[in-house]
Length: 125
Image 1 (tube, rainbow, N blue to C red):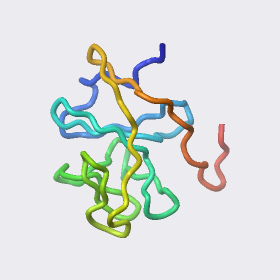
Image 2: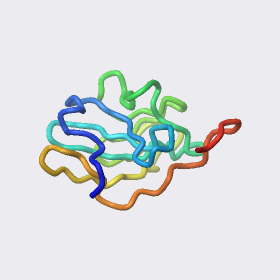
Image 3: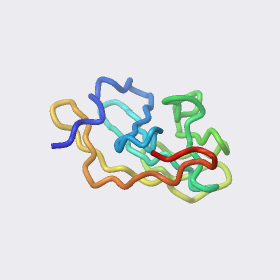
Image 4: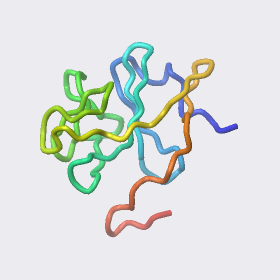
């Protein structure tokens, strides 16, 4: 059995948190919590070269926490659908990550592929 990503209680309601499920050395996905609902997304903006989204650690949301925002491009996405509603990738979607909650613990609900290639000049472990 695989280990949980986190406990639901570890993610404050209305906030986001990044995760590195395969130990790649960077957050390749993130979860947004709205009440009891959890939304999992790949940490890759569909606009340009799948740029990483957080503007700082675990910060994937706009200031009012109403949408997901790409820190690189300012694109904004609906939390529940991943649809880009503002910015350069209008109409594109984030890639969903299926989650499962068991006894308050959050698990990946489907196989998870490695993240995208590492940034230029950085070694990949």
